[in-house]
Length: 325
Ligand SMILES: CC[C@@H](C(=O)O)C(=O)SCCNC(=O)CCNC(=O)[C@H](O)C(C)(C)COP(=O)(O)OP(=O)(O)OC[C@H]1O[C@@H](n2cnc3c(N)ncnc32)[C@H](O)[C@@H]1OP(=O)(O)O
Image 1 (cartoon, rainbow, N blue to C red):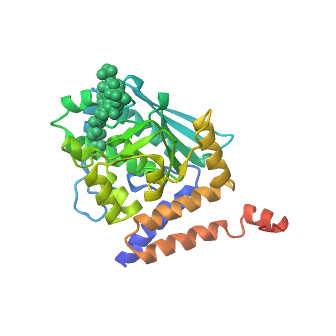
Image 2: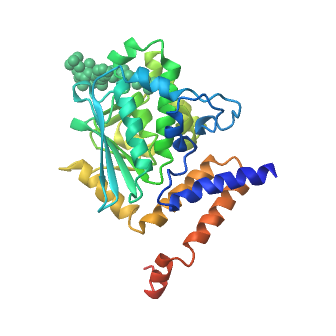
Image 3: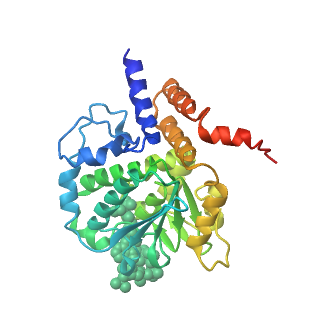
């Protein structure tokens, strides 16, 4: 019974992807609004799914504290024509390192993306040729008493980002260091500029990862490579990053517009088909990854499949007699 209840909850969360009024499937995602109620709740909070008794942090209170550390912004453009959104970190004087205010901005933009039903994909990038050099050290110095709270806030935002029904890509440009490298792991894919450098340098700063990258990197690359990258603090050039499997595509050396090239890469490779079905497939992968139980994931997969089977897109393709040459 308990298993069935759990399974139904997961399915209903995933199924919401297809419903225009949905705030989507992320357990945290339901979250931003709930979280802002400021109530202490028992955790349905994704990063701590195993810790059922974990108390949900009071994200509303943390948000108010973080907002006081000003500087920079995070901006969002959503293009309904091609279905691609651009999330831009903007703190160029400090190489797009993140202040508390930028963390709050980013959480708000992720909430907007959770409500965007026309979207297929998302590109995260920074202005002026760097993705991000981690925490803004001016902010870090003033917030040394506030590490766990900041981490909880970022975990919530970045988990919601990772779980969006959009295919997400980090555009790794210039210096992508510390927390910047962490942000890139909150996307499904990483596209790297031929002149960029990426490194998890936290250990050199006397820190472990603040924004959830140890968890995500281990899932992405496995235990051995995650330990290597996190404990060596090595800074990787594109060839090595590609070889390690950390990045998926290195942009050509001669490239006038790296954002446009990344957009084309996405459109060519991952966004060629129907928007709703692309969102469903992304959500299935999220549900499979989040699921504690193989049968729950299959249950969700079967129910969602049932909504695409016999639907207008399939019928159109059958009528068109498509040949996959
Ligand atoms: C809290 C999150 C935590 C985590 O994930 O766990 C971290 O992110 S820890 C890592 C924090 N980041 C750093 O330690 C980066 C420190 N900066 C550098 O190593 C260098 O600045 C650089 C990124 C290698 C660039 O070097 P260079 O090309 O020589 O340029 P400058 O050093 O002159 O930088 C230009 C300008 O930008 C400022 N800057 C860059 N990064 C940060 C930052 N993270 N916080 C604040 N300011 C930053 C730098 O200070 C320069 O400003 P001015 O001195 O005013 O010119």
